[in-house]
Length: 64
Image 1: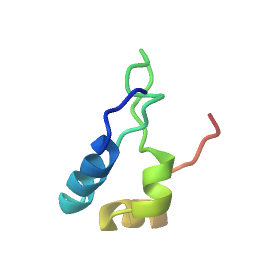
Image 2 (image 1 turned 90 degrees about the vertical axis):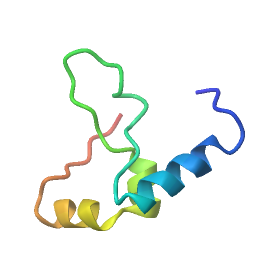
Image 3 (image 1 turned 30 degrees about the horizontal axis):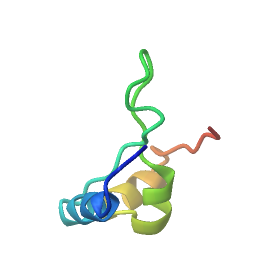
């Protein structure tokens, strides 16, 4: 993606602080498709709301 040094770390810090997530870069700009949570973020830093959503069956994993 060509991100500057430290960008990912800042994104992770902001997302975890706000109990949010990082959207998947592959789905962010696709027309007609909903955004998805970054699988790497989910695997390493799943926030409480993401963990609850997974347990309730709202999160479904798809292969790229």
